Amino acid sequence: MILGIPIQAIMQGLINGLAMGWIYVLMAMGLTLIYGIMRIMQFAHGEIYMIAAYIVYYLSAVFGLPLPVAIFVGIVLTSLFGIVLERFLFRPIKSSDIGPFIMTTGLILILQCVAVVMFGVYQRHIPRLAKGTYEIMGSFIPKDRLVVVFFAIILSVILYLFLKKTKFGLAMVASAQDPEGAISLGINPDRMSSLVMAMGCALAAAGGAFAGALFDVNPSMGFPALVKGLTILVLGGMGSLPGAIIGGIIIGLIDGVVPILFGPALTSILPMLLVILLLLIRPQGLFGHEG
Image (tube, rainbow, N blue to C red; front, side):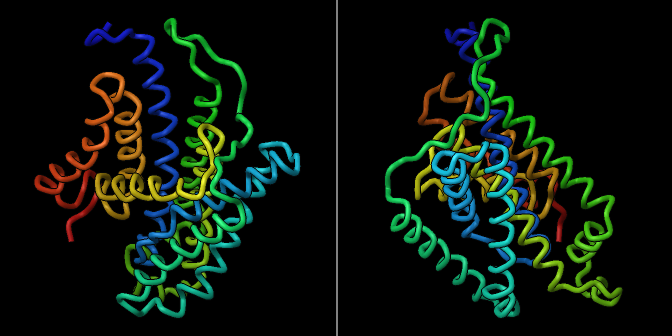
């Protein structure tokens, strides 16, 4: 026992925290990509996460598609929605300082209202990703948590390989590091923006689908996810994918383990305390760069 808490309970908290943490990682990586390339803080990212969860719910629970197919289709549709957003909403105002902030804030309200009108305020439940449990050190761990961790890691590896090994990925990195130099090399910034918005929305869609399968789907689920994503962004460092991964796992483990050991009150304030302390010591975040 630790602090009077059985090891089995702590183990379950660790697994739950890892599952939540990797969902947060997907959310934060999408935000990081969009900010890194487009220099837009996409405050409506939580609503993209929420809308994708509803798409997967209706495809799987209502129309009867197998869950993997529903998730794949949901990711594709959400990516296409991201391209539409970039082309018709964000691209015309990309030179404005305040325009993206107003646009993303307005999108939050619009998408939330659309979700309430179309889907209602009742909680929905996506079918479970996997049934049954594994026994680990005397604890019974739901298989669906491990499925989330596995596939989130796979998506993160795919993203890393795309950015480091492909022509378009290297062009995206170049656009983030030196926008003017990238343009001089013939890299189309509008094409990069469309691609990064599609990828960011795809990551949010995967996170929303996993969250809906583990917990529930409701019109307000996007805001807590956005807050977690922004917290991770600051903690890990603006524009840093390794920072998003490490920050997401830290926040997820806090959410999974701290309530068991110390209660829910500390859980709600500890991430903010960490961010404040880090900003005082290292303002650029764990993996961010000065300047």
